[in-house]
Image 1: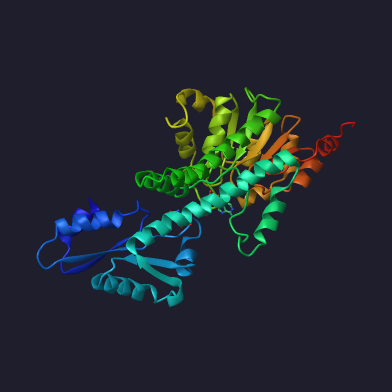
Image 2 (image 1 turned 180 degrees about the vertical axis):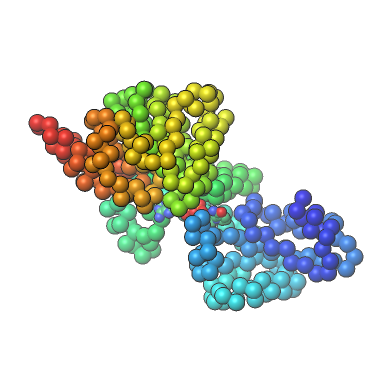
Length: 368
Ligand SMILES: NC(=O)c1ccc[n+]([C@@H]2O[C@H](COP(=O)([O-])OP(=O)(O)OC[C@H]3O[C@@H](n4cnc5c(N)ncnc54)[C@H](O)[C@@H]3O)[C@@H](O)[C@H]2O)c1
């Protein structure tokens, strides 16, 4: 529709820049639509210039990008269009950071970049399950692995899972393309990255139920964080939706607090047809709070699902005093001071690490 509108309105020679993440070969489809509707004296060049901005750091990413990718048709006209867009970026981006490729390579590089990032998260999350089973600590493993300069230390934070509007969509896009190209092994490989993400969310939710003496029915859990990552109110594909849905399915009462996500959005996410067939029951089981200290009153546990900085600064001793005992903390983002929480009397669980039973019993003052 957008391409048709451009064809209708454009005059003279125009460069159309495709910036949003699109299925590979979208530039080709745009070119077809434009050329089928071209009027006399009008010509088009379609460039692929994928967006690499992440939410919360968009301006920084724009001003100081790792790289700018520009893909164009392999022809003299295509080269000319690429040169024009390069000239614009050159006003603030050094030439060595501008990569020019064919249109297809550019489109596929965008999908591949997000797939590789998601794969790193799923890889460390897979290792976190092994850590919990063996007594290793995933943070120590991530540090050791990341010190290899070939691997690098970024994007190795184990968690309850990745979310956001891009990773899942781009992975599934890649899976779809591989299937269409009759490459089932490739499709299965990338599908596994998203399957591992789903496994991690479910595993965390099941661990909460297991630790709370195998049932959360009728128990109150305070959920800290609903956004897919800190410093945003965006909940798209947030692991919180899936963890909360699992707990609600098990009959838990959830007191949810997020510094930025709107109440309406939380209710919408948890009552959508994608996660429940009984929205009225869910509405009765959730309460949304604007103060975390109110959310923990009479709760059996605190469940951390987003890595908001403010969560690390709370007075957990004060929170413990108004909670049901034994009180639990489940840190799905590995941001809290676990030893301090154990010391004040919380039973503490986190991703990729098991605290010894003795430590827990000692912290609660029990004889061992
Ligand atoms: N958000 C957008 O609007 C947008 C638009 C176009 C393109 N993109 C592209 O999509 C990518 C993803 O963007 P995003 O906004 O979803 O943000 P992001 O890359 O910061 O976060 C995506 C996911 O990765 C997780 N994550 C972040 N840092 C991590 C770490 N160190 N270790 C483990 N997991 C970590 C986050 O919790 C989140 O679930 C960007 O890199 C960009 O290339 C984003």
